[in-house]
Amino acid sequence: MDNTESSARMTKKELIIVLVVSLGSFMAGLDATIVNIALPSIAKAFDIPTVQASWVLNAYLIILVSLLLAASKIGDMKGYKMVFLTGFGIFTIGSALCGFAPLIDLLIFFRMIQAVGGAVIAALGSVMVTAYLGSKVRGQALGLVAMFTMLGVALGPVIGGFLTSMFSWRFIFLVNIPIGVLAIILGFLCIPLLKPSKPDAKLDFPAVLFLFISLFTLISGLNAITGPDVMTGIIALVIACLFGIMFIFRQKKSAEPLLNLSLFKNRAYSFHNGDILILQLGLAGVMFLMPFYLEIVKELPTGTSGALLLALPIGNILTGPISGKMSDVIGTKKPIIVGFIICIIALFLLSTLSIHSHAYEVVMYLFILGAGAGIAFAPLMSAVMGESPEKDRGITSGFSKMMTNLGSSLGVALTMVVAGFTMGPKMAMVAAHTIKPAEIMPAFQSAFFFYMVMQIIGLILIFLVREQQIPMSGPYEPGV
Image (cartoon, rainbow, N blue to C red; front, side, top):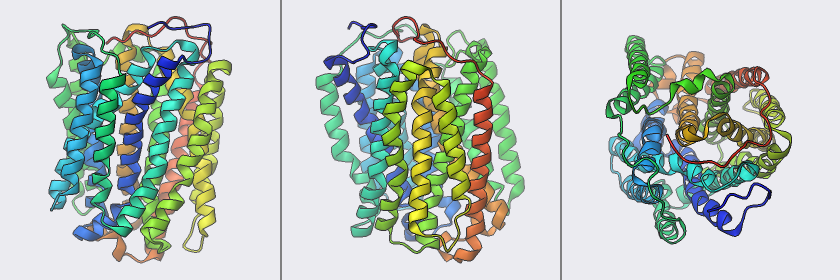
């Protein structure tokens, strides 16, 4: 397929490819918030503490992050189309299993199966888009993909709130089945069948295992230190560091590493990926906390809470595509700076919420946060791809997705850490719905303020990198 550098508009065929891949992004976005809004109901149904309920999110995210780099490489080895559609199939089957899980432990396990498919969808989406589009429309295309992701995020709270209120939390997983079937059919019909770019490559299984153990013990340790068994948490964090170091050494010695560590010698590449993690960390923390604030502190029904949470993704949808297209013209640095400043303001406002705050304040602050994130995210993704050599853009796409989802996982875990230090071990030992609103409110305020500080750090990182030249030269060719 030809990449037309002289035109700032996508061709019809390019647009179809973007839309098909965006359906996967839609599912990923839908699944993220449709589960968030139901977490209080899941915790109440199984009569479990908030920390244990958070594993419904964490288990998914740990597997997702662990397999993103491997999924990118498997796509290069076996061909994007079949691997992509296989991922859709696994995701759909996992969703069905989650919907019928009789025990919380089985629900968490089935979420891990679902995450295997989710990793494939997330890792290959951006590669399949950028493989066919020139640099002048890359930001626009990524903005469209981000828009579909946030459309799923937007509909998640509403659909999840409605299904949970009217039927059961189980339907938040079952709703993925028809979407997955439709995506698989469209994929077979619309996605071109290409030869694998690296058919003779080999997957480094020990590196995948090291990364999984490191992430699993990291999240487990962060959750454990908020409870009565602090020493277990510290030991888990030490193990996480050890296996993280083992992963890095493995990458240095491997003939075919999952990640090209030499890319991190580029300060802009490193800092932009760090900002992706920081931005997503704040968003995930807010989206994890807000259902508990709305349903426990404000005592709102699940359906009403879901409708209020729409404000964040709507702000993102309205700004994401515009910012992506603007970054193709004016560069990526200015939109990223503006986006982070807006996020900082929004998180400060969220930290001022109290038990007496009105619903319209929540809606306004969430909208501002979503708008800021939308302005920053597409230019960030475009900047990362622009800093990567063409032969490494396949793995760069997977790594950026990894940082996004690692930010989500850390956002949930660090929320529990900050809340735990604010309230003490009670947060980890009892179900959230049994805690009085006045007791739990300081935990929310502390968490929002913590994420504001993190966004300030992200803003500082942006000022430390140079503006990227416009436009990037040459079409994208997938490779590891």
